[in-house]
Image (cartoon, rainbow, N blue to C red; front, side):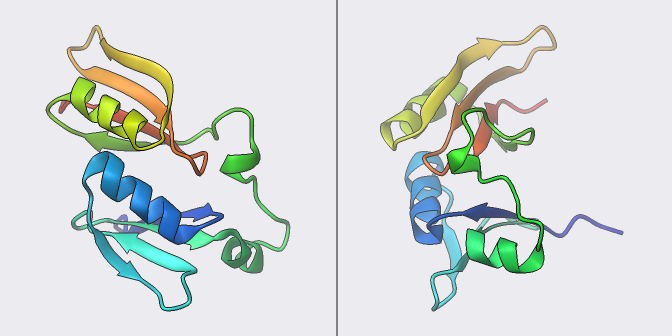
Length: 128
């Protein structure tokens, strides 16, 4: 068994890809011609976005939409970088919403948290 990919359900795939490109400098790998599915160029493990309608087709009982939840979902995407403060500011300038400013943690890592315009929770952190 190996971890293959994460698909995040969003309202507008292209808008989510665009935010990740502008906020975090992660390039776009693929956007399906329908606009309903896209991937970022994240290396060996794929980070993808799909429209809510695709998720609803796979999950007949529905799912919680991050952009309609007042609180972030109980999961996050963690992005590792050398300068959390700079990355955090760039994400805010691109439209992210600050949840926790960059802070040094007791275990030596610097971290921050923000929500993307599509409601997804992102942690920015230095390497462990």
